[in-house]
Length: 129
Length: 216
Image (cartoon, rainbow over all chains, first blue to last red; front, side):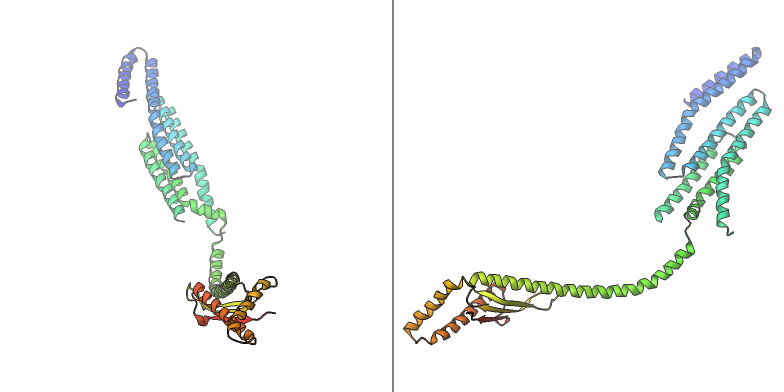
């Protein structure tokens, strides 16, 4: 989707939400979430393009697939956690938003666990016993 | 080795590139520190990969260097002996080649003379000149020829050799010169053969030794 379309969609949704907020606050929140999801989905194609380029580069340079998988998973986790946290924050649930962010951070650190183990094992092997 | 290094460097450079892209792509400041930590760890792991593969292969570096040190002097001594034996082999081969050439040329000369003069060659041997680079020449040709051919061929030749002296002798001299004429004929034959060889093989007259043996 073009940037104009996305901005237009956002502006229309904003005006609608401003109008709706007076009458039905719940619907206005639903509309905001829905528009957010649609914008996110429309951007997924572009993100996929970027990821494909990165993957092609990695294949050409014969980068270990383990590294690339880890990196891509980190990007995905960061994006999804961010999205969820913002939606909940919009709904006025700041505490749940911070919990989602915490979950995202912990999952990102879990991604690092195999890498950390390999590094520590290597260092232990190098050091003379 | 270079290919391995280039692959390794490519991997690291690409990972750093991807990490930069990720920094740009990240939605929130709050995630940045965590992502940076993980990316740093991944890059460290990529840098350490060759060391890990070395450790997995269990390559004993000290042993490697020791065997190298042991091998070098051994190779030096054996190299000399290899050169020496190579020289010897080359000499032997040259000798064998010369012998074979002599044999073949002798065979060929014998068959040629056999066909041309209807005599049988009893002994033949050829001496080759010492080789200069890639050219070889014939030094000497020794032939022992019986003027009369084998058993059955001797019959038609016998009358011819007998007839000619008789014609000449009848005009001039007495029977005893038959033997003399025969020896003269022998020398004539030798002359002919030598001339033929000179023409055919481009030899000097003094290089050809022909003995003609009277065969009963």
